[in-house]
Image (cartoon, rainbow, N blue to C red; front, side):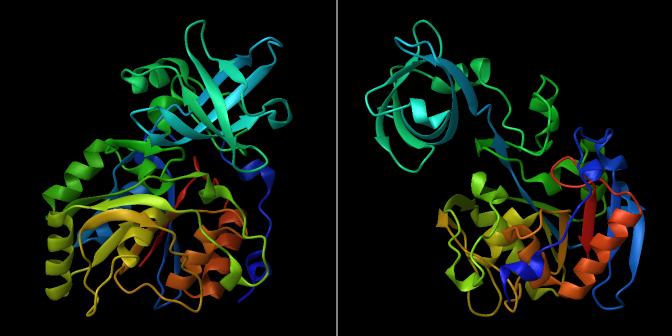
Length: 344
C-alpha cells in the first residue's frame, strides 16, 4: 500500500482542544471486525467487552514537562528547548529541539534561569541539537518546576496546570514520554477497579513515546519509511500472564498503538511474547497483521500517520475508513484529547 492510501480529511472543528471529563464519559465507537457493525457507546462500556481471564495491557510511561523556555546569552533572544531524551545522566546531556533554530549554534548557551543553562555541543537535524546542562543533581525536579506540558501542535492553546494531570493516564508511572499514549487517557481509576474486579488482568509495559508519533509518513513507498526508535520494557510477569492467557484461549487487549507495537516487536514462535527491554523501530502497516493482539483500544488518528496504518493492519482498511466517516458524521472528537475506538 502507499502512504496516500491513508489520506483523508478531518474538520478542524472536531479536533479536541480540551479533554473530556470525567475521562470515561468520552464517546467510544465499537468496531466489530467480523460482523462489520459499528456502534456508538460510552468509554465506560468497554468493560462489557472483556471477560474473566482476559489481559488488558497498558503503557505506564509518564509524560514529563518537556518544554523549557530560556534566553540566548548576549542577545537575550527567546528560545524554546524541547527535551526529547537524556543521552547521558552523568553529564546531563540531552537530545533536544530548539525554536527558532536559526539562532542557535554550537557553542551557544541558553539560560533557563539565572543559574541554569544548557550549552549546545552538536547539531542533529534542522531543529535538533545536542545540549549539555550545567546542573548535576536531580534534574527532573527542575524540569517539573520549570517545564510545560508538551501538548501536540494541533492543540491550539497554551498548556495549563490542569494539562499536567489530564495529558497523562491515571496509571502512568515511568517518566520518559514527550507525548501521551492517548488511548489510556480515557480510563478512570474507578473503571480500572471495576475491570480488575471482573477478573481481567491489568498488565503494564513501558514505551517512552517520542515526537515520531505525530510525524506523517512522507514517502509514498511504505517500505522506505523509518520509524524513530523508542525505548521499551516488558516485565517478566507481564510476559508470563500474556502467554498464559494465550495458552488458555483468552483475549489480549492492547490499550493503544504503543502497547501493540511493544507486544508485536517482541513475539516469539507460537504467538507468545518475551520479556525484556531495549529499543524498537518496528513499523506495522498493511498487509502485515498483528499476531498477539485480539482487541484494540485506540483514538482517532491523523491521516497518513503510522498509527492509522497500524490500525488498518489490525482491521480491514475499508472498515476503518467507514468508522472515520461515521465519526465525522456523529461529531466524535478527534486526536489526543478526543474520543475512542475499540476494535473487537
